[in-house]
Amino acid sequence: MTSPLLVTGGTGTLGRLVVGRLRAAGCEVRVLSRRSRAPGAGVEYVTGDLAKDEGITSAVQGAAVVVHLASDKKGDAEATRNLVRAASAQDRPPHLVYISIVGVDSLSFGYFRSKLASEQIVAGSKLPWTTLRATQFYDLILTGAQKAAKLPVVPVPSGFLVQPVDADEVAARLVDLALGRPSGRVPDMGGPKVSSAAELIQGYLRATHRRRKVLPVRMPGTGPIRAGGLLVPDKPAGPAAGRRTWEEFLAARLR
Ligand SMILES: NC(=O)c1ccc[n+]([C@@H]2O[C@H](COP(=O)([O-])OP(=O)(O)OC[C@H]3O[C@@H](n4cnc5c(N)ncnc54)[C@H](OP(=O)(O)O)[C@@H]3O)[C@@H](O)[C@H]2O)c1
Image (cartoon, rainbow, N blue to C red):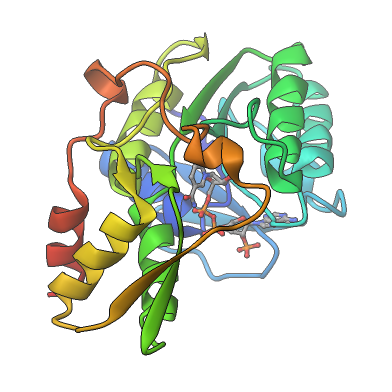
């Protein structure tokens, strides 16, 4: 592909993996970041801020595909709206590939609501689009486990059901989607196993040879998560099925 692919959020956990895979596939890559950065091997950085509507036109200029991964805990809808507006004003509007989260339509947390609103902005645009929902990345679970394991007694939200996935497998799927035809909403991607938060923490404690008591704590307002709201509704299959387990991820990461 001769036109560059723009990756928003290309400096983040998922984005770095997507950029690496796009480079390995021989693509020219442009990354939008809020901080100015020197160009890397085959990667051009454009400074801009999606939420403040700054630098987006230069970032999308001439891009055949925009992989939109940028995200802020405060919410993503305004940023997505600004990106869609700039992309739609191009002479040749790009294919917009968006990453969302499994369960955004069944859980009503503010961040999830903003992801659902972003999905709707993408689908309601006149751009050709593809949206993939994924479950929580192992990196996110690891960060939480590392913090929690600093305490002598480790609190875990009781009954939380999750189906975490390896971010690099999500990156591989996104690259396939970005290099393919616009597909609308594609099947949700999740990891190979449904686990409780307590099981994941215990796996981390075992992998790091720590002895801690795990204390399940009932968190108000999380009934939908205990009821499976974060799980892929149908068993993931084909390219939507992550294969790497939590144990394999930990073994590689903690080496
Ligand atoms: N983490 C998970 O478990 C998970 C699960 C499913 C889906 N997702 C989705 O996957 C995406 C990536 O998640 P992640 O955990 O990899 O994110 P992350 O590591 O927190 O990275 C966030 C990225 O967003 C960029 N960004 C934030 N605000 C921006 C703004 N106003 N303008 C431009 N760029 C901005 C940051 O770039 P700079 O700091 O360089 O500006 C950074 O590259 C998100 O859309 C998230 O909702 C995440």
